[in-house]
Figure 1 (cartoon, rainbow, N blue to C red):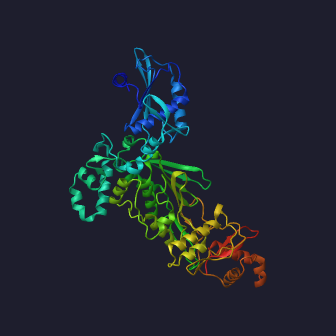
Figure 2: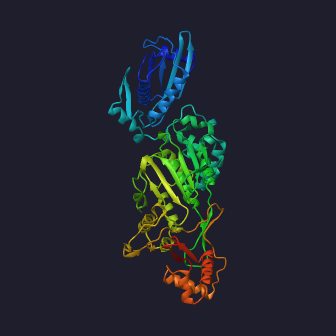
Figure 3: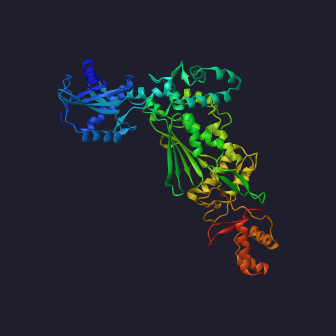
Length: 543
């Protein structure tokens, strides 16, 4: 704001719900400032304004008297507002305007986000004319209900033209729309950008929406949807949870989503099922599941909360996808029901556009497909956490228990039965250690289901090598066994607690010879040690 803008603001307006004058010649109480910030922000939202103003150095009668509030104090204002507002928000900017009667500080305050009132120290404030007070319950409810009856993603962005969109993103959108609608391929090629974007439901009557900016906007277009963020952050963490690398990705998200997927290192994973002496080989993560999980984050993010989408890659074999907003179906069991169909979305306009681009499926089957994909691979099912008004999905890229894997080879298992098995194995592996479990079998529809995990074990490991370009169990270098090696395996099948000395005694050979056989069998992937030297046992992986 400059001097001309200030004079126009003062000449055209008296104090009201979105404009406040304070003399504040030398200072102003920070706590009172926060209350005014909350009040003006909420009132701007209710009035349909995008901002409100708090002017220091101006009397109630609009006379400029000037203020000596220092830049250091201004920085304190910004810090305290950022720390004590919820959700976290701050001034759009604070301008110091020089006039003949002294300097005026013009604090420009953003309107509260759609559907989210702004609190100062956990209390909501508002104004009745010039008076400061608590935001009444009707006004609070009116702001909250904005998300219930309107769609943020469908809102038109004022003064945004097609020059704010990425030509590369539009080109990709055309390709994806043609793949979704092959019968329209020739028409799509003839359409100009405005016609295409309207038909793909990326714009409304030729006007740019928040969804348009998210998916197709240029990098510098993000400011058009503030305080919402068009941002995905990829984070790589080591086995101790320490950050090793990270990168931020911004609009257009139709391109950034692919870039994020390419950041994830999807290594080759080999494991033994016991059905063969040869290992199974697969990628750590199903590419479809990665794509579906990330696109779900984009489609269901609550952008009014001014948060970002995160994808955490953990080197010990799992991914975590996180987006802001409550889980609308309430629990994962509802989504896994065969009769489930999504009845509502947080961002219906955005969701419809993503469906048209073949990015998501609106019938609500995406989550079920992810679970079935993990079942088919015999991997643990995804975990969901809905706390703190977020949706966090953990995707496993490794096995937890080979016995669980063998159980999943039964194609007749229902998703409900698989879910029970999955929960049981994860209970036993809580905190990375096998818990003591009883011998009772989980029964469902007359079928016995058990993970058959031995008792008194300290920790089961598939010995996945660290810091390699290829994750693998110890693959047999030679599938042939000597007669004595076959005997050693047979003894361990009968009694997994036997020692090398006891086997040597049974075979009447030297103990060192048996130790060499055991070491060879372990190295070639026929044996796996479960637990430590004291109290551990041997598991025969190949039969």
